[in-house]
Figure: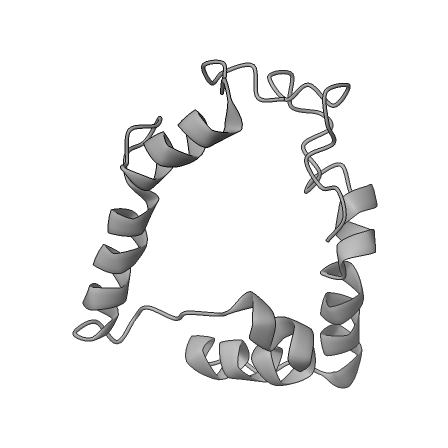
Length: 114
C-alpha cells in the first residue's frame, strides 16, 4: 500500500529480510533497543506500551501528564481517551493516512482492524 517502498514480494522473504534488518530504514529491533538502552540513562524519555493504553488509558494519560509536568482536567482526559480510540483514529484523516498520496488506500487502508 505504501508506494514509496519497494515491492514487498513474498511474505516469507519479506519477513526474513525484515528480521535481518534488510528492509528500508534498517533493523527495527536495533532502533527500538537503542532507545530502550538510552532510557536507562536519560530521564527525558517516556515509553508507553499499547497494551497498557488498552488496559487503562486514563492511567497512562495521567502518567504522561506527570512526565510532562502538566495536569489535565477530567474533560480534557475524556477528550483524549475518545480521540485515541481506534475507531476514532481510523476515521480521522490526520491519523489514517488517507490524505497521504503515497499510501494507496485501495490496496489496503492504513488502519484496518485495531
